[in-house]
Length: 226
Image (cartoon, rainbow, N blue to C red; front, side, top):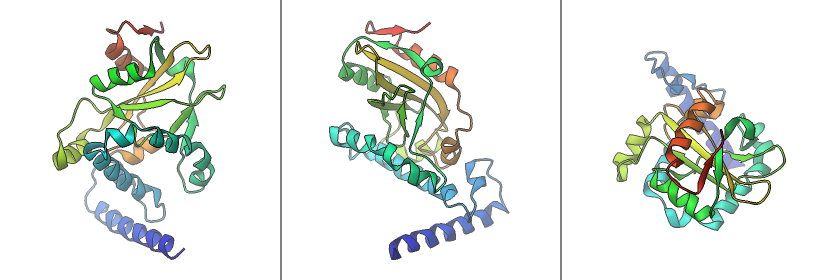
């Protein structure tokens, strides 16, 4: 309880400083939304920077691609009620008729290897997705517009990558292959856009579907949805 109170007070103090600075200089970014009375507005950019560090320094592929990490992500739906009480969410349902890009006729490993080759990395800062029939995601990948530098320069570069394409994968209803879905949105790894990402500002399903379809079009395992 003491630690929680300390974190809350610290966040409000930081938010107050940022909000005060905002009164002097408008950044035209999501940082302008910082409000001392809404901790989520300061938590979002803080988590974005931590996520950028994780994405660049990767305790790495060994961790984020592990069954353990995926299992941890599968627990996100169970935390949604608690998150909602604090102004954000950890899971939501998507409409496959809106976001479906195509079907992958092959193994999940092959699909993920292909996404990696296209510049995607495992979605560290992504809400858990599910379909109306209850199927839950089996994989989540993000492309911020190509690879970034290594080290601290990469973390800084991610702060300037303001958009991302998010691909989420589900098992097909008939058990034959995988359903690939996608959307384009504000980047989750930039402190400048993290809060907008959280609120879905700028989300563009059609653009995300188009980008993902073009990236996968050359693979014989991929069958696009017309």
